[in-house]
Every structure is written in structure tokens, then in C-alpha cells.
Image (cartoon, rainbow, N blue to C red; front, side):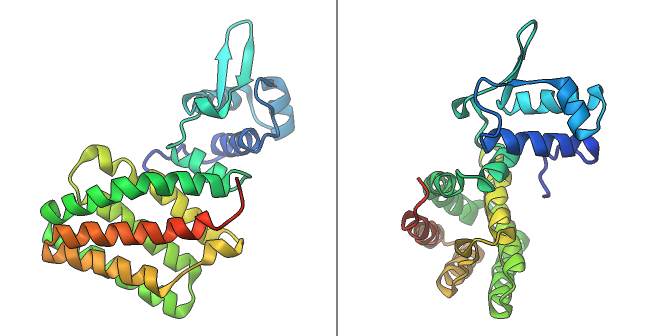
Length: 238
């Protein structure tokens, strides 16, 4: 996963991934203690690797380490729900559908504003790149290339948010990208709901940016996200 806040690679990343997923899946209950010695033995890593991993998970709000108390798992109300790794772990656990609905409701507002701003500010070359990315989604759909479709989808939304030239909005690209990338790699049927209508809205939105048509861009962004939200609102998973 190509996040700008990437946590690294090797043993450290492996421990963070395993422990983060276990916490989010509820395998370690809220308030439960995380014992460094047990992790060292179970995962075959050093105490320094475990300490760094716990520090990272603490920065995400998943655990809290306190002197003479230990490291305890925190409730989901403390989690950094916009962190790309938290998004990924929730997407692979029981919260998947609920999380997608929450993120789509966020995107309903954010992406309309982003589309309008990008139509006014995006560089011509970047707008052309966005249109090419949308056409890449179309080619992936024709080839039934699910992975390629959602990779292009994630790239599209990153380019859209970055095209606003608003640093705060652009920082949401990793969050949205994480959710889209997970859809492409999952085996659940809903993850593969590639549709011609979705591609049409992506292409129309990109063309509106090329044309500098902010009203059209905003309207297409609304239609695009509304369609996906409707898709998830018809699913069980709460």
C-alpha cells in the first residue's frame, strides 16, 4: 500500500500489521493488556521492535502505554479513524460495511467541494492526467480487471483532491485511497461492483475539470459518490 505515512517494512511493519488487525478485529478486547514479552515470544522479534510497534499503534489511538499500568487496548472512539492503516484494518474486519458508509458520507461533502475547487485551480496537465486515469478505469472495466480498476479509481481520487491545491483536503487522499485499494484486493462480491455508470461519472467529472466547468464537476462528484453510497446502503453489516 503506497501511503505517504507508510510505517516502514520488515519485522517492525509485520508486528504493527498483526497487532493492529487483532485489536480492530476484537481479538484483544478493549481494556486488555498487551504484554511485550509475550509478543516477543509469539512473533519471534526483539523488545525494541515491539516497543516501536506499540509506539506506532499508540499514535493511532489503538493502545495506550502508561508507566506501572502497562499497555492497554483503547476503545474505537479513541482510534484515528482517518489513518490509512486503521482504514485498511477495519476494511478487513467486521466493521467493513459500516466504515464504508461512514467514509462515503464524508466524501459526499468533501468531493463536491474538491471537484469545484479543482475545476478552478488544477493545472491543465494534471486535468488531462485525471481524464486519462478515468479512461484507464474504462479500459480495466472492459478487461474485467478488478485490481486495475480500483487502482485507477484510487489514483483518480488522489489526483482530484490534490488538484484543489488545498493542503487540508489533499491529506484525505491517503484515507480515501486506502478504502478504494482494499476493494480491489478483496474477494467479497460487493468489492467487485465495477459499473459502466460509475466510469461514466468519473470520465464526465474529469472532462469538467479539463473544461474548467466547476458546476458540472460538482454535480458529477455528487452523482458519483451517491451511487456508491446507495450500493452500500442496501447491504447488511451494521
